[in-house]
Image 1 (cartoon, rainbow, N blue to C red):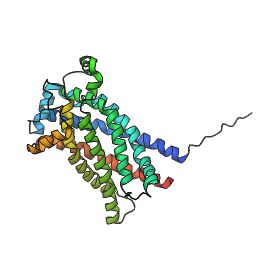
Image 2 (image 1 turned 120 degrees about the horizontal axis):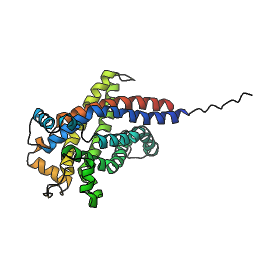
Image 3 (image 1 turned 180 degrees about the horizontal axis):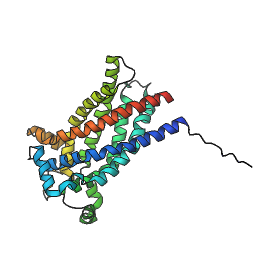
Image 4 (image 1 turned 30 degrees about the vertical axis):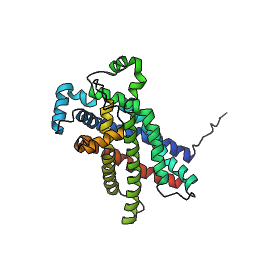
Length: 293
């Protein structure tokens, strides 16, 4: 007697949702290329009196060897894995949800669903992932291990893990807003200007570079303030306790623009890698999503 095993078919929409999650997780591969840039940038922000990239890189290598360029990789990898797990499905499904409920409202405009999506992802991301960011900065700027951090701050661990939440909040929201809007309007301009339904690889590379410029310019000042706030206290915390925007305005007033953009070359390199992956994958996923509806 032959027993037939029933074949279960996964619905196309469910299959697509699973695909977006897998795509997000696979994009973590680029982190191994990005992390050394992040480590050098953070060290440069710590020692912002140094003006040359070669000096910072040489100093890092002398002090910690090649291992120093990968300090903080573990919390960074956990952070990226969690972020990529929910951000790709969110970027695809949330705009459609917001459009459905808001498109008939008098205040509606075409990029509103994407703007709201960016803010939703950013606020979820910053409050959940800031402790991992704090631990990453500790490992990158101190000659210590994670166990040292937990022992040192045993009595007030949660407070320490949430240091730098203010600038981190501004950085994350500005990053998402600049990415969402620049990606949306640049792609629309490219399609209307060139008259193409589908963008070519060269188009996506150019767009991702411009998106990278927008993201770097908007986030670098907050990234610098975040690093300063999340480094270990030296007993002179008065400046760190002041509001993020107040600190930002003080730097502008004192013509410290160069300091705020310390390591922008490295940040831009990171952002270009991220933007190319994000812009290309988002275009593909959005096209496939439209076919399902």
